[in-house]
Image 1 (cartoon, rainbow, N blue to C red):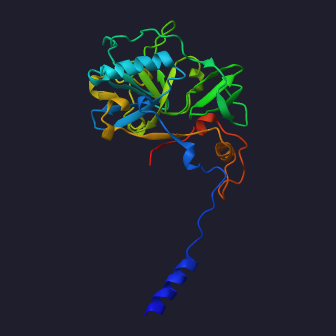
Image 2: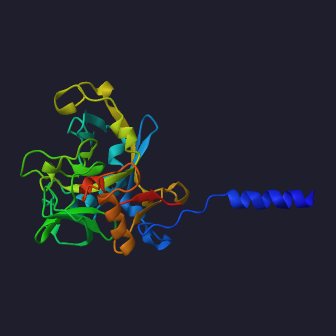
Image 3: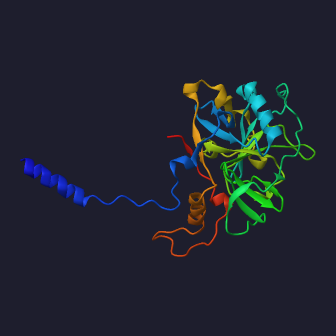
Amino acid sequence: MLNFLLAAALAQAVAAPPAAAALPSDPLPADWVAVPDDELLVFTLANGHSFTVRLASRYAPVHVANIRKLAAAQWWDAGTSVYRLQDNYVAQWGDATEKKPLAAGVVETPPAEYSHAGPTTVARLAQRDPYSEWAGYSRDGWPLAGNGATEWLPHCYGMVGVARDLAPSTGSGAELYTVIGHSPRALDRNIAVVGRVIDGIEWLSSLPRGTGDLGFYTTAGERSPIVSARLASALPAAARPHFEYRRADNPRFIAWIASRENRSGPFFTVPAGGADICAALPPVRKAP
């Protein structure tokens, strides 16, 4: 009996497929870095679903400071909602009446934080970007596009911008939107981009489309109420979400870019030779 069990084990070991070899684009454990708690803003809807925004404080510091003040004041917890869903464009949320007073200390008209001095990229795509001279990545996992000494966060799927009226309005940060369709890159450098939805975007993109002009809901009953918005740093430790971004300052990420620009495998018979930055957004994952 012992010999039979030994023979069966040996046969199973021989039949087992070999482990997949590591690819040059595979990250090392040290390539994953924790997103700070004060960069994570969790919105919870009345239907029980939630979505998490990573805030880009380095690229829009005054707008993000406003957003943090609004969250600390629990401004979004009453009288706010997702009030616009325009198909193949954006989901927008805040105060649909535009009458709710802002929280104390919020700058009503921040600077136009639409672009900034650069470049701060540590890696770039091979081909020129249709809307800029180049597109690439910051070390800490943000997509960027730029011309000369100026760069900006592009309007890709899931990126979060600040809704505003006509200039000189720049938006306070109380009214936000996220891209849920084809990337509207013509908005680049015209609106402050303050972050990216890194979890739960499906709860926004799957909401019913608005039937009014520009996708606005025409009745209050169509809106999706927001019941809370909290920075992860304000939540109890056990309730905080944890995410990691992939560092871009290493040869493994360079290889990852190449793998996005030239897809391999039996399905892809013609390499593309390039990629749109919005089709190669830097990886972010839930912390294991």
